[in-house]
Image 1 (cartoon, one colour):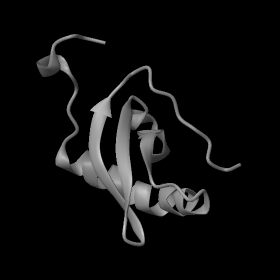
Image 2 (image 1 turned 90 degrees about the vertical axis):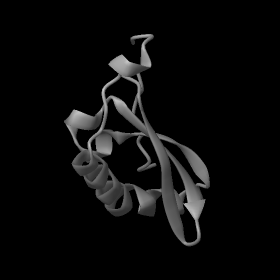
Image 3 (image 1 turned 90 degrees about the horizontal axis):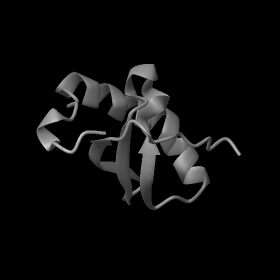
Length: 82
């Protein structure tokens, strides 16, 4: 991981939309099942290209809100199909 913020990869608007749509479709039902309120997840659920990205979320009304994204190539996914 580089120390320079400017050298960090960036997500474009299209990637953010794709991750958000997949988060709503795939992850929100699992998070509701586990009574999640806030946390950090790997974006690998949205495809291999996003495995190095992490998203921070919090509950909002009956759903969830992604509060921000960060790049962490050493981040790891979590199987919520327990």
